[in-house]
Length: 459
Ligand SMILES: Cc1cc2nc3c(=O)[nH]c(=O)nc-3n(C[C@H](O)[C@H](O)[C@H](O)COP(=O)(O)OP(=O)(O)OC[C@H]3O[C@@H](n4cnc5c(N)ncnc54)[C@H](O)[C@@H]3O)c2cc1C
Image (cartoon, rainbow, N blue to C red):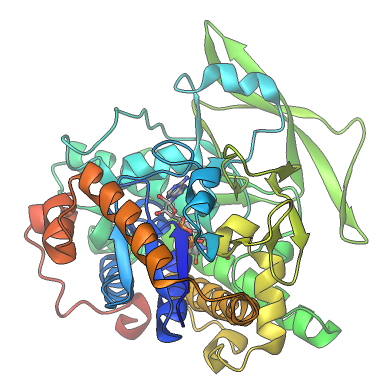
């Protein structure tokens, strides 16, 4: 088929979209804002998931090195190139797979003034956490403190709570002359402390607390269908088990049915929150009036979800891109611009896909077997399945369009080559990746993870 598609973003969704188009004989260029593709796998998945990260990145590498796929690093839609320009080249379609990199704004807007002074957002925090061992790659120092508060509810907020626990315990152990690291602690802080005959209390640590505005059973932790009462009940059991397992292993505290309604400040710092009790009625969060109380804390991290970044030329509806056709995820006002993956705030799509797709592995529908690496794999596979279904629909649209002429294909290819040249990319994908991968913690620590076992298999 003589069609040329441009995919924006080289994460799980973008690589899968590129792969799906290429499998159908369609040429693809993947424009990525960073030097590295990988998206959330590199900068959001916590660095203790070494094996999973390597496996997912290898899968992305394989998809991006298909002969019909061209990779274009360091090229951001809206910065190096704008959407009208791409469309003017005569491309068959543009597919936004740029993920969700903007933290949903904290419900108390004044908190924004205290970023870096007692308050952080999750996305930059996890980026820091993943790179803090490599001063060259690490953006800036972050302050960590015991007794922190995490506002959230999804998988990412559990990661933030885990990361805070790991860093405070690591520091407390170091003060006692005991060396540890976050890769070792992934097997369980409970286990590590037990090995040393210590408790959190003996280390003088109270732990951080995760507050969620709904109930523990409502936490969006794993992609499971919830379309019948039985499936919903099953999903709720699984959610509870995921949370309880994480709390038992990483020793953080949890409080459901609370939402922040105010902040406490002192001497130019945020020093606490005003929380309000809530209840859940017919799926809605209902505030309990008059139930407000203050919680003092040295650090608040907001992890209430990531939303797509506003881009020039792409209309928004509320906090998401405006879609005209929700089946095709077509961007309003354009015939041939679509969105896939986290860029469409995935869950609705993923639920659809779980109901319809034969490609979703049975494991996604079955029980959670106890390890959070598996949760990520499930999200990623569910995401890929949703992308594959959508690309199928887009490809069907393309068959109704006139194929591009050989001349048009050459023109588009020349523009892509110019973008690659501007980025300093010579087409040697593997060489480029090797030069741009940050230092890995496991290499710095000379850890041999080849015989690494999951906490479950070791239990
Ligand atoms: C902590 C954590 C929690 C998760 N929770 C969930 C969840 O609740 N639900 C769920 O469905 N999945 C969840 N996942 C899974 C995960 O988000 C997805 O499966 C997948 O990794 C996202 O893929 P993506 O390609 O859509 O987005 P990303 O991985 O974010 O990739 C987008 C890529 O686009 C690039 N990009 C962004 N803007 C531009 C631009 N303007 N121009 C060019 N390139 C651009 C980015 O640099 C990035 O490489 C979670 C993952 C993690 C790590």
